[in-house]
Amino acid sequence: MKTKILLAEDDPDFGMILKQYLELENFDVSWYQNPQDIEPMISSSDFPFDLGILDVMMPNIDGFSLARMIIKENNSFPLLFLTAKNQKIDRVTGLKIGADDYIAKPCDPEELVLRIKNILKRTAPNTPESLANIGQYMLDSTKLLLSHPDGDIRLTVREQELLLYLLKHNHSMITRDDILNTIWETNDYFTGRSLDVFISRLRKYFAHDPEIKIQSLRGIGFEVDFPGS
Image (tube, rainbow, N blue to C red; front, side, top):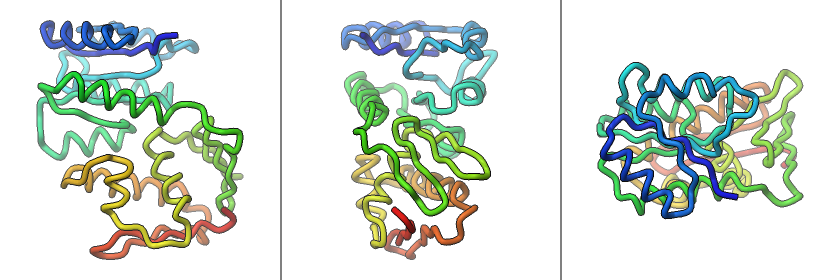
């Protein structure tokens, strides 16, 4: 079965190029130039897409606003932003919303396909050993679900990927370079800021258990302590 991609891009030439290229790569692409046409589908119990590619700058509804609507109804839905801007605020805003990746326009279609495949690889079903005790929490990696007696948290794909990497290196010192090169596959200012956003998010999620620690080591990276894992 083909992966169904939601493409929101108002530029007719660029949108057509992306749609045709992605279809050549065997993706099923639904392209919308007007994001308002997507709204009625968002609240549907059968949201028909596996991944979304959203242009940040669109008329009527910008990509960030559209993403917030989608995430509100489909918390773990993988999202990738297209942006013509290189300002860090755009990228950080997208990450805070819950995006899994971003790519600057005009982009290399081959790079876009590679990023899509990496996201889909991270969302693929895990092995049967998908449950992990983390202090007072339980992680179900097949459902992207972090459970606690006070409530459940639906993780994004990138949040879970980072958490699993930290769990793999429990009770160890981890350098920022290792995390960035392994998970983001690059190491620059913007990915460094992205890492900081995701680390802050994980600390917030684990706030109910004071025994869980993700400690920053200035100029080095992090030291993690996940009891019971």
